[in-house]
Image 1 (cartoon, helix red, strand yellow):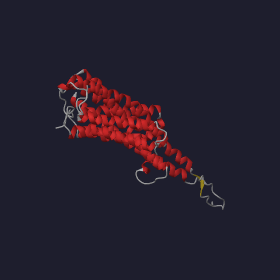
Image 2 (cartoon, one colour; image 1 turned 135 degrees about the horizontal axis):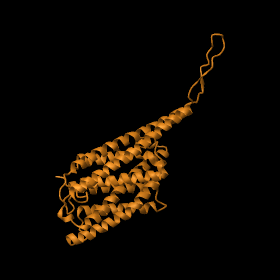
Image 3 (cartoon, helix red, strand yellow; image 1 turned 90 degrees about the horizontal axis):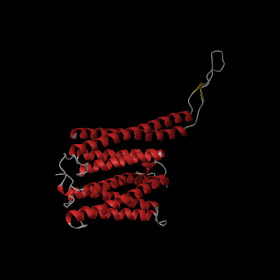
Image 4 (cartoon, helix red, strand yellow; image 1 turned 90 degrees about the vertical axis):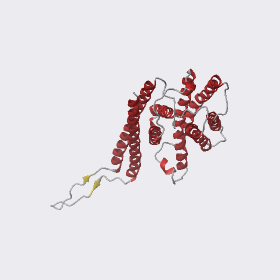
Length: 325
């Protein structure tokens, strides 16, 4: 089961990579469509002179509109292929988690490798739900699949940890309650960070900025749609994250005799909570610009990354269960 899990992760990475390439093709064809549509349409070319001195019929050729339509169909096909392969990758990803859990005879959340695998799967699954509800946001998939390739590949190549028994301190029913909610919220925050960054780029592009990285957002959905998606995802994840922090404090009281001790992971969790609360408050305040509020969401996710990677790698504490040597 352990070997099968590792193989499924590798196949999932390959699927996400193919999805990213397919999304990139859709992106490129979208640009080509704009160029073709801008070209002047010509229905007839070169009326020649026949042998008897008469005119030969003009040869019909495709108009610019027809060429643009063909390009649009190819772009749409590439986008649909990308979504289908992403769904396949999510199934392979889920299979890797299930088989690892069966091999370990526990929930697959006992170390940083397993946490990243689970959190990224939550992000992909949530993205597929978003696409089902709002298919017009599909071009955001290029950036989402890129993030998935980077994170899952990092987990497999850098964070990989052989299956070991659960750390005794984690052997509690609170393990399921606390870790399941924290990993779920982390996965949604991961997904929410993608439209947040995309909104900042697209907003700048709509304001006339044509330098890097704003030009990357040329084919993205409208800034308003990206900002709305950012808010919905964070508003959904924040209460779950709040419950996870409270559950962790209750578990700490039962395990260590105190609910809060400013352990490095507890401290960074509190920092993340404050920043995300600040984002939601800023988003609900009319006088605060949406760009400013969205920057808070991006900073919040950076603190989540610090809590996941930085704390586990560079700090020692009661939550040092990363599994890295």
